[in-house]
Amino acid sequence: MSLTEDQFVAWLEAQRRLDPRRFPVGIGDDMAQIRLTDAASVLITTDMLLEGVHFDLATATLEQVGYKAMAASLSDCAAMATRPLAAVVSVGLPPHLTADQIKQVHAGILRASDRYNCPVVGGDMTCWRSPLPLVINVAMLSEPATSRPVTRNGARVGDAICVTGVLGRSLAGRHLDFEPRVQEAICIAQTVEVHAMMDLSDGLASDLPRICQRSGVGAVIEADGLPVSEQARRSPDPVHSALCDGEDFELLFTLSERDCRRLLKTWSQPVPVTRIGTITGTGKVQIRTADGSIQDLKDRGYDHFSRGSD
Amino acid sequence: MSLTEDQFVAWLEAQRRLDPRRFPVGIGDDMAQIRLTDAASVLITTDMLLEGVHFDLATATLEQVGYKAMAASLSDCAAMATRPLAAVVSVGLPPHLTADQIKQVHAGILRASDRYNCPVVGGDMTCWRSPLPLVINVAMLSEPATSRPVTRNGARVGDAICVTGVLGRSLAGRHLDFEPRVQEAICIAQTVEVHAMMDLSDGLASDLPRICQRSGVGAVIEADGLPVSEQARRSPDPVHSALCDGEDFELLFTLSERDCRRLLKTWSQPVPVTRIGTITGTGKVQIRTADGSIQDLKDRGYDHFSRGSD
Image 1 (spheres, each protein chain N blue to C red):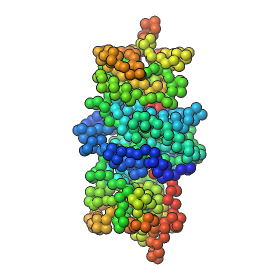
Image 2: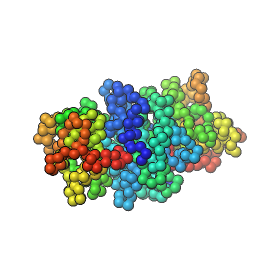
Image 3: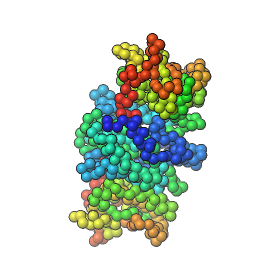
Image 4: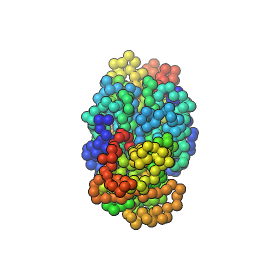
């Protein structure tokens, strides 16, 4: 792509200054926040899934594609520790799709909607005029579950870095039926003070630099401490898979050492939480390998912006 | 298409019942309303524009396409007499687009955003992996400008039917740079009690039946009373153009005879308001032609659902 999404977001942010009283969280985070009254605000996110980029109908069912479209936005709600409210869905349809096939897409949308209590309240459906790929866009609203949504820019030097679940699972097709960490995010943010959080859509090696860049900090990841998935363990380079496999949709967050200890001690949910590193003042995102040496992620060949989507 | 959008919306509505206290306006109107607190609610709409269906880059500039994507959603805000709050934009990009071309699309988005005071607060950008068409989705939030948003289902027998502007203008490429009637809608709804309203995205012959169906009423249009655009006057069948030309994006609304007289008397804005007919109890959508005869629109060959988009 001529312009990466990160470059585009940076350019976009520079175009217009949003009033921070009206828009406490703007462009560049997982969701934007809009204040309506002193007592009420909503957050909004939008995600477009393109056939051939985000899914392949040779390996995914239409029902899975519908589920994934909703789940990507639900994961954005989780990323800010917010509670999903409602979704609207736009679909661009290949002309050959039958009514039954369209309803299969919708069955997947409803599966996610029901599971996460996020009703679909509207939509838009258009048919391509020639055989062209399926496109689904989900825009989702949420409301804060804590005093304010958790953003990407609050990481502090000395913070512990944690993730939920295990990394490198999308290898095994899990990117089609992952479970957005909505309840887990709310529970974490209600238990401790989370300084910064996002969901892992592009992989740790791409996403952690985003938190660091927004927060003006660096980080060191402990390679030994990564919760590597079984699938990734069987890959030629398990650490590489855990760092670079996109679409894990786990939570990545930072909090004080003390809160981290407290969280790990009291955490009793089935989805694990693992400490994977520390926020530093170096401005660099680094990894400490098994032999104790520290290297920049960049120098290890981890491409931060290998994918164009968010 | 195997399923028209109207059929799909009907099917969708039947899938899940929305709680009317939480969602006072749900699927099937121009926007859905979500109540947040007793004092605060938001409305949301989503519109997907596909290259080759909603625009053609042989006749439209990228800047115009960006403007149109925003304007379609702004027109939905107008359709319910609500005030635009914020938008999020998703873009699926052909891989050959340069950074400058992407910025041209965005310039059009910003032109609409600035004119209607509706900031773009977030987005999503993905690139197709092969040469495929441009897709833009805009999801927009608004807030009620009157005690409650004006829906499609409130038309009453005996109501006057009115439109803003003139009809049949998209013939002249106006569908690319139309002006959503946001201020006009709010002004009308604050002046009189509007019973039902929508925007004319598919043409009067397609859209008036939607108000009638939702309200359980019929209608008679006076062919002589239609505000036919200059372009449509020059067409072989001016009335047909005024009835069937999609994407006029004018307001269609109904109100009591008395309020209609009051509105027409006091209306002083540059965009005209014209009375075009009357709501009836017949259940049929009809037209009275110049010779005084009344015919069903359907029998005149006006296809209600000729287009798949909304």
